[in-house]
Length: 227
Image (cartoon, rainbow, N blue to C red; front, side, top):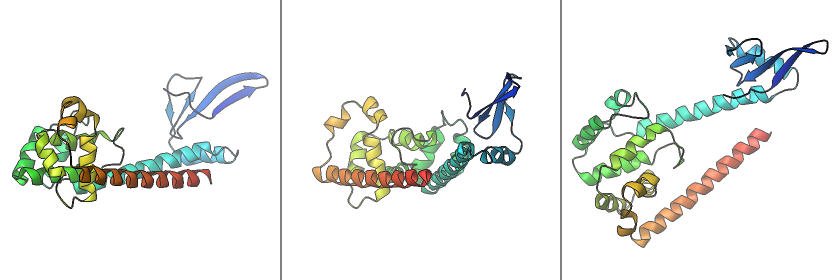
């Protein structure tokens, strides 16, 4: 889909013989053929650019590797926060990431937490242990949201008003009640089920702290990227 960068033009005299483009350090495209060619050994290819003071291809490869590592760390955190009853079913029910099979998870969760409030709190904690963004997050995180949306709004609000919520539970509750799906599926509930001012203030403080942490991490990342 992309044009690739950098582009290498090969000449014989003044005649351009071929155009070769780099694609993420993993493949090359050439005007002499119609498909991309996978780079079997990326390191010599990257060293060719390094020798010519063209550092962008290596930086892109390193950035992709760092993002992949961060994604794996986030996924492991998500698995660890998952309710125990769901873990044996997770791989099988989420094979199709964009259309997971929710029904077996519902039954397992109800058996593990017959008490509805405990079930909600467990799901709040799970939903609050995601990658971080409330929009543009990994698709697998939607499973916790769907399970929470099985539960009537008054029960969600009652659980959200529980004293001494953990940071993860606070994050999960705020993330659910403030999400687009909740507002679309239950358009009248956000205005008809009010939380006490103390709980709303708690969320405001939590959100501000979360935002400041995110900005600090982004600043650190940008500084390291520029060095």
